Image (cartoon, rainbow over all chains, first blue to last red; front, side):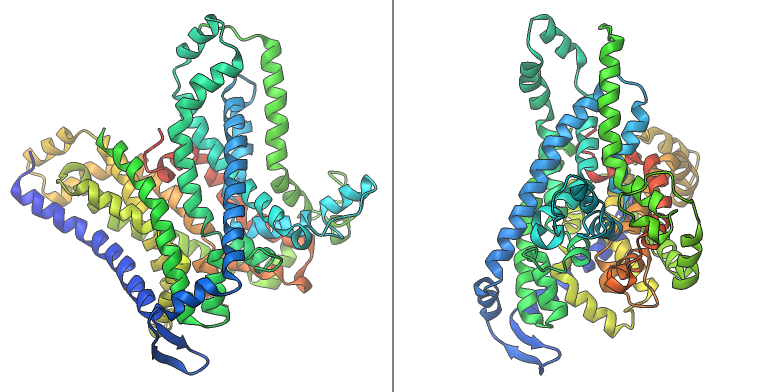
Length: 288
Length: 276
């Protein structure tokens, strides 16, 4: 049993981590909320006082707000669907007996470890460039006109790059979940004459439910914040300006801190809604 | 396994899996191959897959021209420093949560995780402003500190899950033998938790190495790590495929190798123990 002395020692040892994270959360957050209620243009007159909820209203009524929301949702939704569907299929495939399983796993997981700026730049130039990119060579080979991927099909291109980065993550987690499935259950179903498809639909998929939820939530949090992939490829042009990229531009490019901060508050609220669901699952898991 | 798998089925699985695996890996493979081509061969149409004049010239050009060493050094300092600092702060915290839990332990853990969900762009300006005021902009130590804070929740969480697997009786026995708190943690807990600490170190080093929001926004010439170095290649005049590939290969190679060792920890670290 823990003694009283060790209890207070424990509290003391937790203090540095708690204080640091508390500071990390509260200080910038307070400042963002503070700025969001002010007219603050560092390059054009500095801090010009309170404006109430003006920034909040202006942020959502500006002509770039709804396109940014749409772009964010399209990218998020497409990447989630692609990575989960392909991830489930890949996880099932990798769970089958085969030769060189370990090597295949390494090949599949590799993209996750590639630095975001590297993968964005490599895709943009070496693959998607309309004159020298590998895709343009391929298109010409079949007599087709090469596509300017990042300007004519900018959103699908970004979705493709981001999916390539996140498919390994989804696959790895789903594979871990599949491996914990009791194989006897599947064998029993097989002996009872269940087809592979119904074995998948009634046994494998329900078993994966929780892992899929977790992949969706974690990816959502990271995908809402994708930055380097857009910064390097299109710089927010051609309809690829997501909500977080819009906020970045308001803050650092047009130096409208008040407006950008109001956008930041919206982003924080949005992320917290997603986080709440994730926390509930993680918290439940902590109990048992 | 009671069920015998026919060789034929195994062969089909193998073929499928290898084709898909190579397809997914192809962009990395192609980048590595391109880094050994001449600039002309790098953009030749039709593309040359293997039979080109292998050269390491691009690597020496990149290193000479761009002061590659400094970017590499910055990456090592920032990723290594933030991880080690984070672990030093997290070990005592994880110890107390794992071995002296209170009613609030669970809430504290979840709250720590929730700070990880804070969108960076929402606090970009405050941090930027604070960094200017403190003279930390474009400073390796400032960036190290920020990345430490970003990864601290994951570090605490991972260490906590590893510590919980260590039987508390062993620590109690040490205490009975008269070990103080400091020696209990330093000489009893830490050696037993070395595998867990190493995994935590590895995964968080990778995460910090690849971090590409704060490293791009808070650095310029002095403190820029490899993420920013690579991003500087996005200007059109700097576009030489073979050199770009060489620079990319150098930036990702160490992490790819480390990453392959950390597959298992990746699941534990990024799902916060919710998938096992």
